[in-house]
Image 1 (cartoon, rainbow, N blue to C red):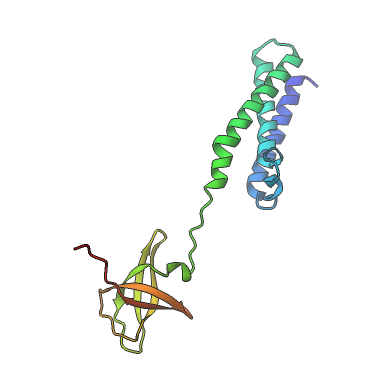
Image 2 (cartoon, rainbow, N blue to C red; image 1 turned 180 degrees about the vertical axis):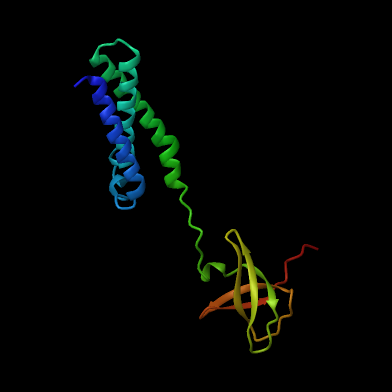
Length: 172
C-alpha cells in the first residue's frame, strides 16, 4: 500500500472519529482532566493534523518518507499546541450557565406588575441577563405595595418572594 493511501486512510478514520467524538463527547467528559495531552479532542486533532500534513507533503513534494513523517509530526505538534491553548482552553473556562435559583435573586430590585395587598399576594418582575422573570410576591411586613413601584427582594419563602418597597440611596 502506498504511503499516500496510508495518510489518506488515517485522515478519513481520524475525521470520522472526530465527528463521532463531537456527538458523544459527554460520555468521555472526564478523560482529559488529569493531563491536557490525554484529552480525546487533543489526541484526535494531533492524528488528523499529522495525517493531513503528511498527505499534502507526500503529494506536493518529493521528500523522503521519513522526512515527510518527521515534518508532519512537528507541524501537528505545533498546530495541536495552538489549538489547545487558543481554542480548547478558553472554551473550557468560558463555560457559563444561564440558570438561576430563587435564592440567587435575593437582593435584586424588581417592579410590581400586580399590586400586593395587605396579607395577600401580588406579582413582580425582575430583569436579569437571562431575561424578564415574573414571581409571586408578598409584602415584607404585610404592607400593601402599589402597581409600578420598585421593590427589593428581601427573602424567598416557599416560592414566594418577600419584598419591600425599594428606596434608592440618594447622595445629598
